[in-house]
Length: 453
Image (cartoon, rainbow, N blue to C red; front, side):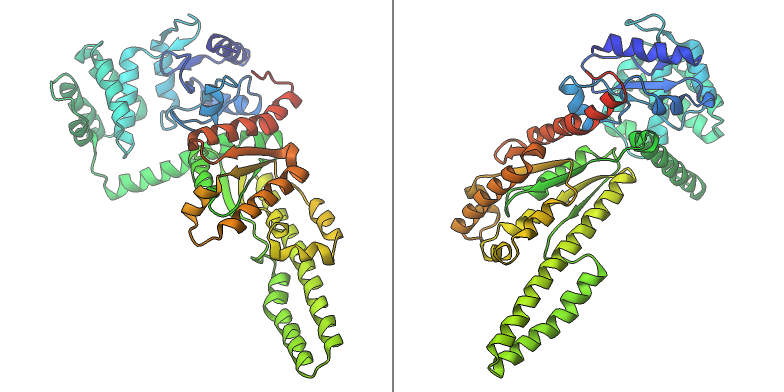
């Protein structure tokens, strides 16, 4: 679905509730998202869009992010709901009264050039972190408008925002600079920076927390208003396969979605019962086995050792089940969970295959546990893994890699994405995002009767 169709659908939906579609700038078919203002938030238009979005609402980033990868692959054209949450209703209404028709559709309103520049400068003053790209946009816009028009727009916006005298004075001082020859990023950063007093600093912190709260509410609209869980993503691979690096990059691309990453290892203990057994009771039983050996009671020693092993296996299963239940609770609360490793590692190491020999039904019990939405198997060449883990034995690592790949393919093939470790990290992240859309969100919108493209 192209940009024109997306905007038409969005406009028709807003028409039904008496709302006006107002864009902060002329839309671009190749852009990662569409910057959208809501012209009357008093009618809770944002809540309407979050509950019943005619097109996907996602937060994104120019070069990364869930929505970015999906839009680049033609799946969606995401809408960025608030370009500046601190802009008041009065300011947006003023923007709307001066807006012009879009080149895509004359009924879709676009901010005037003066208001686009005033809005960007206002953001530069409000946000403590300077952005060169934003300043470049401002400088380019001022080439097309006169200083008097820009100053009038500044003053009107400050009035709508109820800003103090110092803020208004600072905005007016920017106008001569914009039309001067010195338009460097460093100089612009210096001029737009306002030394925060204790009062303004506290106010900024409060506003930042409010924006963060609103961002999370909107980013998790699927969980909050459709009552479905976020996905679980599990990274699997031998030591040195690049799991941690991929998880770190995946976390960066999901920085506007509420997520958490965690580890699942059978040798680490989660539940208090497991900790009690492993740290106290097991030691007592092992001591008893040693004593039985010393008094040459081989039968008693074998019985105790067998009991220790079987009990340990049951504890590992119980502890793993509790960990997965914890992950599922986080997902049900609207957090995308990224898991490092899986319990399959228990059955891959050569010295642990005796577990299955002692208790063949153990694997069946583990397979009955809840599974992640997506397994990502990192298939890195052994030579690359050895560079990252020089202490590993190459033969043992190669064997473990083959066993793990075969085990995952046998039991989890339908839910698994195999990634080549020698591919570029961005390409791997893109594949994960696309598979998540296919397995998770794509199926959700189909169930809800929404259009998928």
